Image 1 (cartoon, rainbow, N blue to C red):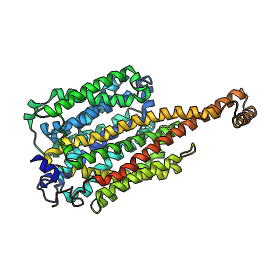
Image 2: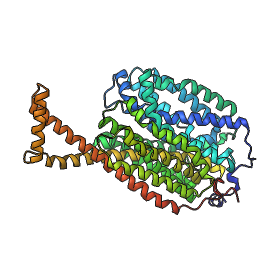
Image 3: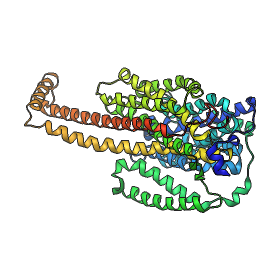
Length: 531
């Protein structure tokens, strides 16, 4: 019976509710959306200000990345777990506890006096805050009828994509204007308001406390080991020569053991921690695959642009934020348009346009030079922002719109997990390609900048003369150092271009695969509710 429900996308997918939604539920949903915005924003808001936090906590350069890694590892474990917890405790209790816990952990992070405290508080913040994210997606497709999807889906799509995109910008402004402590303190008042609203207003479902006696502790342990260690391996692997590093090697072994335990329990436990049956719905399976790739684009480009501007252009976090706000602006203005389009055209065509737009933006970046600045990056950023929204809305509708309500909570956790894992895998691949291709291009360029090269000799002589006229330093050494810097810069540029080229191929290829998805039901109908 369950299978028939899933594949047909039959009416139970939508509660028997009229087109009018009570004001109470709308306010409750908006509070949940804002809570999700805070949780996702907090992933990236710290990234632009790690140097300030490092100085404030007297941390080493090896320790400071853990401020990010601890949050990500904890969050990636909670996101799929939240489906079970939501069924057991109810959306109201889970979301309220998540919002309150996230707020308390934010306040504690602001009081951290050393790096160990900060890492613990960030892990708590990520774990508890991760419970807010899937709840919003599940609530959107549970309480709103198909006719309202064109409004609701762009809203959650905008939040899920805009928050990580503007995170570095917001973080740069806050740490410049105040201090790094305010990166966390800024969550406190909104967090209290969200927790209060959630407890007072959410009434979507009832708890099922009997599930506690069936809680699969072995499954939880396996999932935590599998996903947590996978996140660590993907984060640390590229910079530490992968399995040559002892910590990465040990985590890879723990990840494998955790995966075996996790999948064994998923298929044998009476009430598994994560229900994978949602993947039997072809549209959910494809939607999750596309969500994974969107994660690569979302988090990959949010990482690549600042690294380029910092490494090649020498920008600080404030200047990077000012240069990159265009993407967020493009997303904001495209969200309502994508909502309207989602109710008027084939969602697969809309997604194809978005993916090809993304590919066009990354192809544009393959012509990168060391002089590129705000105006040169303008078109690629607009394409990135608009395309992200054109992809996100139909992916949400295709993946979650045809599932019955009893599957939505688990499925929402899985769907959000795929986006985060896409980001983690994408960043690992991007970092690996940057490191390997940088070394390759530097070796190739160095072959042409040798004593036997007439062009290199002429350039060196001209630079030496220039230094002799303008400085009193050792002109020859200064010229050689300058020439070496130019070679390093060009090698870095070429490695960036290689990454953008790979992303172009990925998104361009995926654009053609959209036609493999089954055509959803009537537009805006969530894929079958409108028969």
